[in-house]
Image 1 (spheres, one colour):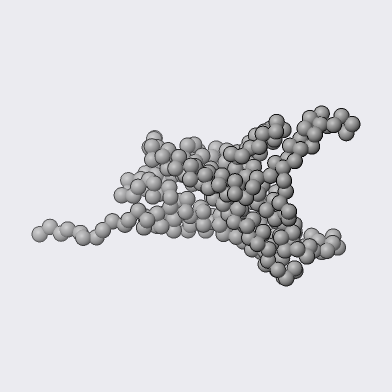
Image 2 (spheres, rainbow, N blue to C red):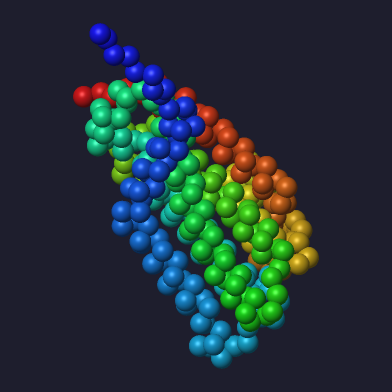
Length: 281
């Protein structure tokens, strides 16, 4: 007598959650996560202790306290490092390490694999950003006795930026063959190439609205009261300024909209490209 199985295959959502769970286990075993937390702890310790070391008073304003601790340059670098480490080679490593030969033949959609991996990366970078912000916010509460909603808004934008930067990393990982190239391109695209293009645009008086790295400036600007406005330093031969210098500040709304756009578009493109790739060799 033939035996038939009545067991149903896992749904797409269940498959995504399974991929995410095992991918998180992989990240927890990696040295990358340990490294990023060591970097976080070292910077936070230095920035929290610096005023006391220099015999300077701490700010009595909650938002300003957090802003002084989480210098935007450090926040930006930390998010870029997290996106690079956990997203940059997430897809291409399946091809480079040949693990795709074990994974792809299974009855699971490539889109589920992609979304599961992105979900695990999103959770990891969420933890990284949350630790970074909430240590500073709690320290600010201890020192100033209050928590600013501006710092919470900045935290929300930083999380969006981390998700958007990770989406860029996933798109790059879906295109390139090697992990090293994907990691390097993700880092330099976010750390140097995009900001360089932003700078060239602003020198010409063009606000780089579509740029993710320009929109990330709202993370710091939102903690400034009043919110900074666009302005121009006009050319003045008496002070040696041969051309106008434009200073642009993205609004919170445009920042959130552009980052959400990157998350959606990069991941849709990444899934499309990943589904078309085949194991070769």
